[in-house]
Image 1 (cartoon, rainbow, N blue to C red):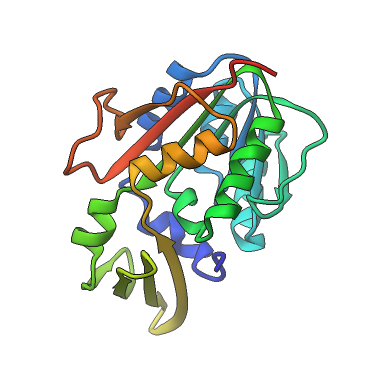
Image 2 (tube, rainbow, N blue to C red):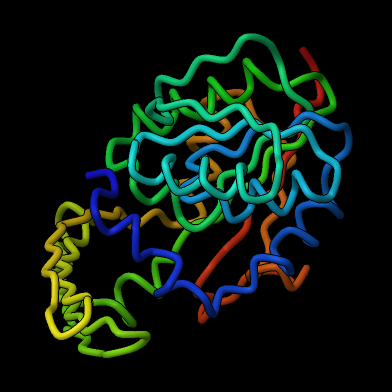
Length: 243
């Protein structure tokens, strides 16, 4: 499920994410000027890269997320193309120098064949020598930290519950999200259900290979260190070495 009304409070809940450090990591790995931000969400990475001089295209399936991203573009006087498209069906007008997919967008692709198709599309629209960077919520994080737990919190005028149910047979985790957003003396309720799939690193590498990718590097977050058993976010970096 794509983000609906949750999109309008997403940034308030994700304010502790160090997007600048993620952008630093990306900029260290890529070359060229034209970057596709696949699953761009509210444009946090897109706008940072654009401010750093990159020509950025943002793709997302959520109109609400893209609405917020567009507002950021206007507020920062950034000329950015934003496209409403599914990640496994996206189409561009030409090729790009780099593709990034950040904040576990890959976990939202529940079907292996659709993920292979996404990887193939990225390869198709990437220039020779271009770089593809994406991250996932690790198996450890989804199984052990999120698991079948319920989280309750209140911050920045938002009270929320996050109920999780992980199915080992399907490797799919269901997130039932309920938010109460303060508006004066009243609260507005927002309910959404999201699904993410566990992908082991070996599965990702195999699916990348089926889509034509080789020589993949993996990192524990943006640390440049290899992932370990307790890594919560794993970054993958690969290049299109031939046509």
